[in-house]
Image: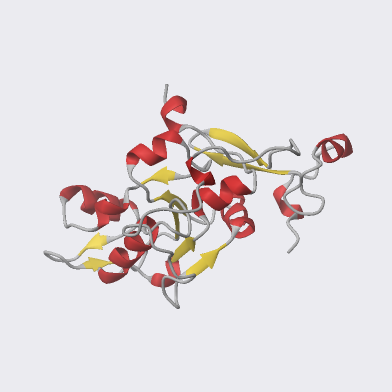
Length: 206
């Protein structure tokens, strides 16, 4: 899969040579615009780099951390990293970090917004506000019209994390079109294992 469109045509050859660890052949980085900022997403260039944080763990207690299926549903497309970058660079929709706020504030993928999965599990005024922002129109006490719903891509901590699948299933139950939902199964663990750029939202807000 070629991603030459990720990099502006004006990228100098010296930049290409500087990035020995590329995203894909000839593509050293991707630039995205989100929240009024421009983020440069690239892979870690140090050849001896490895994870030392919580995402280096290979075992987690179950419950709650069971391995999630590759597909949430036959109609919800599962994304890999190249598809995530395509989604972000072409602004194809809203990129949602479905983790609890404490996870999100420590580290997140550039361009994502935090909408914790628990918010979708109960009918509350806060959920109504978010669903309205996603393009939903409340058409009764508990009925929603999602004719003009936004396309959304959700992620959480990784293949062992059920937060984004839970959010997707909850949205599906209230009628959100599954074809307008995408699932990045690799989440934060796969993103960091590949050495991609992350941000610390709690620091960015200062």
